[in-house]
Every structure is written in structure tokens, then in C-alpha cells.
Image (cartoon, rainbow, N blue to C red):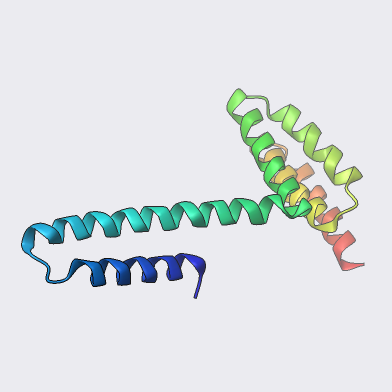
Length: 131
């Protein structure tokens, strides 16, 4: 059982034991408490997910690349995004980061009308992975 599931179970048991007989007006309060518990579980799940990503250099680098690409795309500067991704594909020693960057680079190239270059990036990455 996950931390989220355990938290919810414990909270529901406490509420049930403390509540005793439940009247109609109290049902609304119990519903509010259950929604609050659900929101808190989601919050703790988000914290756990962020920790998992931030604790792994490859995952963190991939998320950072996605955010960089998102910012450049929103600014209308896909060329700069392509430059950053190209640099990562060429310099990264991590196959995981290099593969993710190659996929993002191919997407960026394709979105800017450079489908032939996008295919070449993916073929080169594929060749590297098949060795």
C-alpha cells in the first residue's frame, strides 16, 4: 500500500471512530474531510514525484530540457531551443539524456519544417543505440 493509501486509510479510521453515530448534517462534514484528505494525498504524491525526479540526475536533466524547450517555444524562439538540444545530444555522456534530447530535438526540427533533419537526428540516435 502506498503512503497515500495508508494516509487515507488511517484518516478514515480516525474519523469513523471519533464520529460515532453520524447524522445528516455531519455527513457533509465527513465529505469535506474526505475531500481534504484526498487533496492532501495528491499534494504528498506530487512532493514524492518531484523528489524522485530531482534525486535522479538523468530525470532532472530531461525535465530541465523539457522546461527549456517550453520556455523557448512560448517565446517563439525554437531556434534557440534547437541549439540547446543539439548541444546536449552532442555532449551528453548519459544515453538516457542523449536519447530524450534527440527525441525533443527531432520534434522541434519537425515543428519548424525541417522534417528531413528530424529524421536524420533520430536515425543517428537509433544507430547509436543499436551498437
